[in-house]
Length: 195
Image (cartoon, rainbow, N blue to C red; front, top):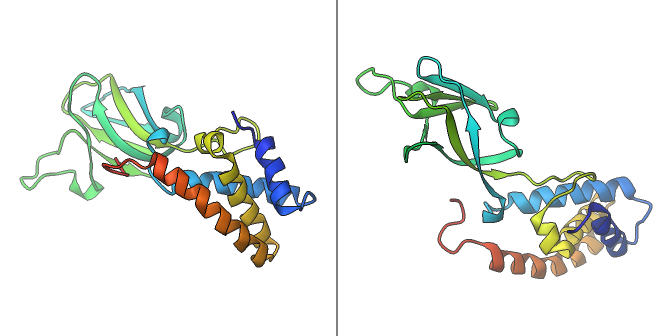
């Protein structure tokens, strides 16, 4: 498992700027989030059951507290005891063309998901893409574990660009593209990259 300190050492080696500790740490955080955010990687997809309390066919969940991992994007939400999936709608679409409530739907307001269900559900099943843990303590990234030099190169390019050394950043960017291509070849889903 690659640690934040391991990548920081590589960033210092690539930039030869050991005195830029804060910039290097910021670069690692930015690189990690950027690389995870560039695609809907199946390695970032998480499935999780969440308990709910239904009142009058409605319930809501704050995804920042209800889910075990920070959620980057929801892939699907289904009823636990059936094959019925909740459809995401705009709040203006709560009623159908006949003026009836649309059940098995949800809409989002900030981090709160508001559900309308036709049954007394006790839990729902979330499938979502999680954010990496891009902080020094507890750092966790499958990309960093598998391609640590890619994260280090992205961070080094960030550091060098930040201090205005565009020429050195461009050289690292050229080398970084080879590593990025390997990541894309090995981890993109050939059927669909966003499901």
